Image (cartoon, rainbow, N blue to C red; front, side, top):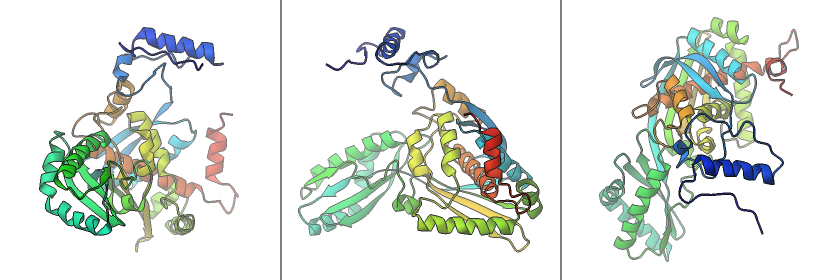
Length: 394
């Protein structure tokens, strides 16, 4: 008979039940818990964030910055907390941030917002499915009212339609304030779908999520239509600033970026960037984001050119940046402190955090993009050298 993890129906976050689970682990596995059992905040605070808690994972958090952002929501210099176990990473991001400061800052622009739930409606035939598309358009305002009755924050802005065979794949697009909004949109869309079932008899059945929202994975629909925040970060770096700090010329960087973009095309990659997931994952861990949303948020496109003056223009557009400053894991004590470092905790701060995140990613792209070059004279490579000096925890 399988052994059962200790649980309490009365209070599964009490000190007693946590101690029982710690003892259970030591009795039934080779582990001895010295570090995971230690934490400084009330385990009751984690109710709704995790089940079967026995401790915490202590991930090192470093500070990068200052990052100079010329945004519409994030304005000024910010110190950015990053949680990671990869040596050299913060040093690289710091180098990119220095280039940004000496170039006058990174300009950030939020151009879209949408969080989806994507029900699929199934009909006896393709013709009935096609007719449903028109019916859905005509009743948008009624559906919107039903969906929004479940939330004080979420707003249904659009219902995308994609007809295939006897099915209609949809994406219910919401704005969700400062919350990431996955649970909010699920509840709202379920209410809307149940109303549709009653009002449209030809419908056979529906799936609340037919996977067209492509949650926690990359997709062409997210690249074009967006999921979360669509943010662009851009900068023009003076030639002398680039050579002095990155030891690479604008023309050399442009040449390398062209090769990388071709490689992304040949490999069917989700982006033509160097490593957006690195900075995002470190920021997500530090600030209580759903780390699995890296699946969407990592998706991006980069563009670069050498200007007529010989300077270097670089931009990155992130069409599916999912971040929150309210709800979820953001209120846990450690994560709240990290958000407060950037003045990004609470309501009214999600756009600001998204702009900082986009600027952070751009800093990492500049630094790593330059580091992959091999010096013709010394035959050294900064990328390899940095990991040998700073990342040798073996």
